[in-house]
Length: 392
Image (cartoon, rainbow, N blue to C red; front, side, top):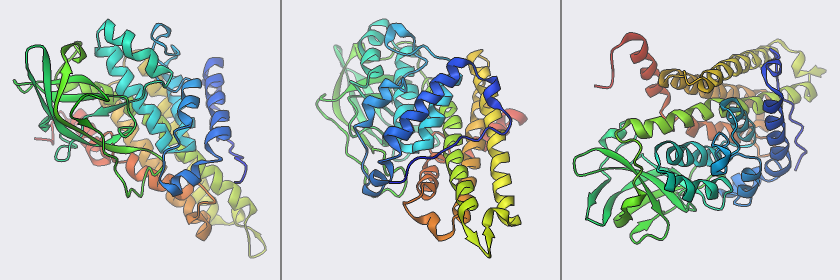
């Protein structure tokens, strides 16, 4: 395995805007990725296997619920720190970042935000240390972009709820200890329930044969008359806005994470272009390659500034769903285009596992779809600026 020589681009001196704590958090994560992720990730992607041994390291660098307060086991960091952690992890691999994103934004966030104090005390500390891992059940086989149409449901049986249904495309599900599941009650109102592994009728079959996120564990959640204790209902919020609030947090992390994937592709392409000699000179000296590289760094810089400003708004409690949606769509689209251009810079070598680009490109095909597809996010922006919904 080649050494990880990654150097992060910072064309507009974004570091000058970061606090000492931001840089400390980012640099610690970057070093962990170089030490723990880079040496093994190509092999695990080729094997289509999730490297479970990374979970303890993710917990140690504070990647699980970094913005959750200390009293519940979190690091108590701000939203920019969270973004930087996601950026650095996705620089290593989108699938590993997905594991951290799900744990933080889709499991710990709803328990902290919508859960009871007893639920916070029971689950959050163990989730923060990685002793327990979680997953998030919203998407169904027939309901992806329209989650409000879900058919998973629960009925009140007096001393418990009876849960039935199925969820699909669930990151972490094959090994998760708990699942935050969204289902409709008998009145058709959406609520969140915490389902624990071992509950009778609850199973998590793994999804195989993926060409994307190959080093991530993806599966289903199946509920066949699962008895869920009433104390496992999240009491703080219900309706579709509850899971969508979780998705805001996850999409924000993705907006930063995609920058990491793009930076890695750019750094790889730049390094290769300087070393690859054709017609008696490095290909970096040719106009077409300089065009590609110049456009890459320009788009990365724009995405960095967009994510940083969004982080400020998140810290101030001012970021809107539409703003988060725009950043997720723009930054992932930026990253996938850079991956494709970077692959061309490397020519045939770009498709091999000796370099990270093709793996990033395949991963980003999932990232551009999950947490709201590229097209759906365009329509969210369109609705926000016109006042008219194209969804109905």
